[in-house]
Length: 364
Image (cartoon, rainbow, N blue to C red; front, side, top):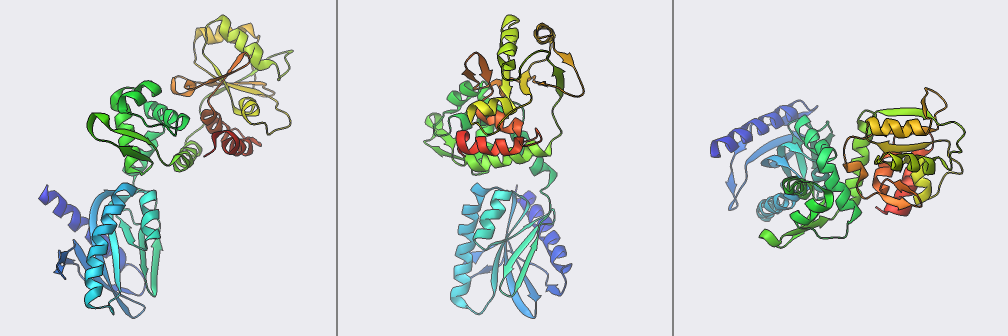
């Protein structure tokens, strides 16, 4: 492990040095490794000269950095900086965290504290007096992939459960039962949320409980992920001689007749949760594909169209999108968070309706 960390340090600091040397009108010296000065040790120091002024970068190297890690790192850097400045206040000292990957939330915390950072993907932030550098690059594919995975599959069911009961404390077992996932999935998802500083914990061992502590940040990232992925499969139908306002009730009757699970979503559901639009021209629902679903649609006399659809069917193979559905009269509505996510890419004024629903009903 020592050799592995040493290799990480050397590779990361070397890439930092190359990035610094490529900056215009900047001279960077070779790194000093593990300097022990003022009774403190840090991974490396690099002296740079920018705008005719010398600055000392105090570098702490990590592999992957999330918000949860930043607080401990800030404490370590502060100890070293305080010791250095107590000896010579004329030195321009810039604390800097260098890592293979740094999450967006971690970068925000570092910027708030005016601590520099470098990611091996090329991101760089140096808030030196008289020499301010800021380069932002996309996150490494591994980090982006791990975050994207949070919002898909079984993990997304955990997120639905946490948002649905965002003031509740959960044990792993309780959360698994609520989200209808395995304890392993619930535990892995909670661990990742803690790393992102979106979940907090109390207790230890079997009695440990956690809850969602940053619902707004979580939903903001979910929105970002939804807008970044390709559109889900949607089938367009026209149901003849049916007013769009009573179409949900007719759909509910057909689905009940063939024991088909469904939920109304998008504008039709949002209008019931938090009215915003003056009229709607279509109804959207989520429904699993299969013969029973086809039979229900046949009972409605729905026919496939390319234009003029008044019924949209979003093919849904996962149970996650049906979690926490709510009954409204004779119909089932998707839970408000799912309706919000479905509205985001619906077109027209749907995104406005989505944000209205978020403010009025979801509240984060």
